Image 1: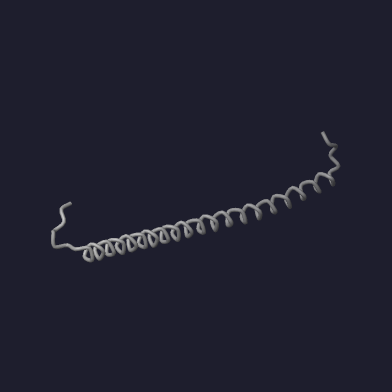
Image 2: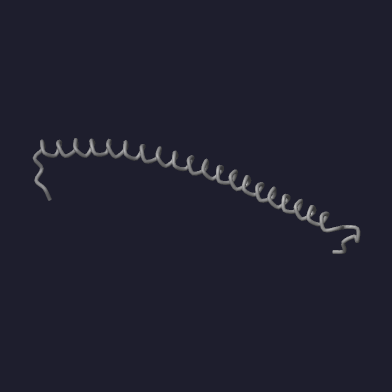
Length: 85
């Protein structure tokens, strides 16, 4: 890159400072983008966790009904006095 001869040391220092500031702004933008991506991922994780908890709660409720039914059937078998196999 060719620099004009009229560019003195203070001008170069100013340009470098501006470039550094642009770099910091760019890094800040990347950080903001990363935060947004992390927030979106967190929302996805919450949604998945909620769906799983609902599924587990349903499963436990169904298990409880199943246990009750098994207990009822066992009591009926005891009443009928069917010998075990």
